[in-house]
Length: 67
Image (tube, rainbow, N blue to C red; front, top):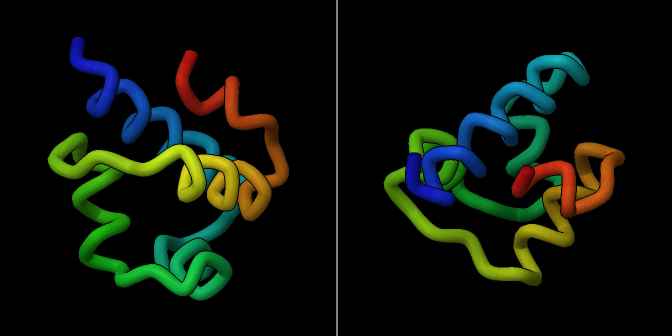
C-alpha cells in the first residue's frame, strides 16, 4: 500500500473516531474540503506543515497518522 493511501485511511479513521467531519477539519486548517477528500482517498500528497496542523486539529501526534 502506498504511503499516501495509508495516510489517508489513518486520517479518516482518526477523524471519524473523534466525531469530526471533513468540514470540521477543513475549517480548523483553512483547507478546501475537496482537497481533504483527495488526501483521505490517497489521491493528493500532504506537506509536513499540513501534517503537523492536521495532527494538532485531530489532537494526536503526527507519527500516529503515518503508521
